Length: 467
Picture (spheres, rainbow, N blue to C red):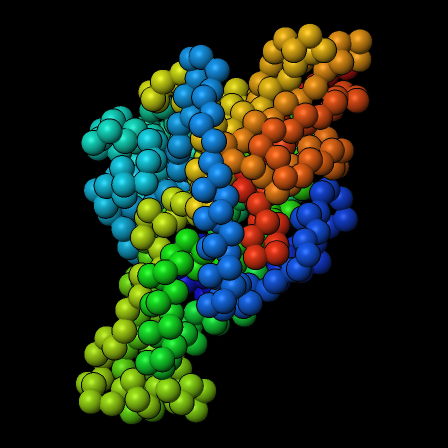
């Protein structure tokens, strides 16, 4: 077993796990690295109270400086969630009404569902489609390594070869994305609209020490109380303590963008299945697991490993739930990562068209509300030539520039061209980069929190083509 982004119940073969860990720790040599910070903290360090507090204080300072930015006429920034689970598997703890209510609470306007395929049940049904309590539901499924978002039922093709399935999914503005990219670094993108460029799941599986810190935090009265205090005071910072720059994901994205147009989305991968639970076994041990674990799936922790267990189990009966901490309610997962879509209206068709056009950026919204972020190309007469997702002709005589606006001052803005950093701007709410050559250009934005550059925004590209 290993933990998915919000649970401990996704199985991997030994061979696949070894390959995945090789990718995680060996890395690759091409592509942009995370920006160098004053310090580089481990997830274990970030989980400490003093670092959660410092991160929280720095994020608050960013939010206090927020500026009122309006988008160009006709455009809306529609905050959306891709890769969302409810009522769709044994390891999903949340319900669809709960998810919709939490979306309303969080300012999320659209949920691109990713139900686990469970025949004969279809995932394209009226209750999973359309506006429900003001939130647009877009029906879809996570299946075969893809996020599938068809416009009509494809239930008859779900067991077909991938090529036939993807062809049918993508008819009439259907969408298909590569999911869990760490497992599929060499997968062809020919029949896909894009890929995940961030997934909380990956951060969790490569950080075994961070996962163990969560388990051990549930093994004494003091550490449980400390953990609950962290959640109460610094909920978003605690949920994000494992989050790193998604180098592996972005490297594949940049490699593939040179070959064809693609769209990057955030895989929220929310399940509301990280409600941590402690159960008494006997006087010498407890079980630690989640709200979706059966007892045999929970981790048995003996008093020899954690002496505080002795006090926890005193006067409790075997099987009693001693403690419970909710790490991932849907609204907190949504704050962890969102996909923002520049569209004309909140309709299924408009969102699909905007996504296909690449008018999308990914954001860790817990740091600061990113609405007001905008990227466009201007010429030397300040005439707008295009925006995120557009294809433009390179013309050196026009003095083309990429202009970036943010709703708050950013610690660092980077311009990436064909996978390499070609420009940087610091401590600014506006950035201006000259386009020196044809290429695929995308923008990354970071905030310095507790001495570290933490990713805030990853924008989809603008394509500057040779004449």
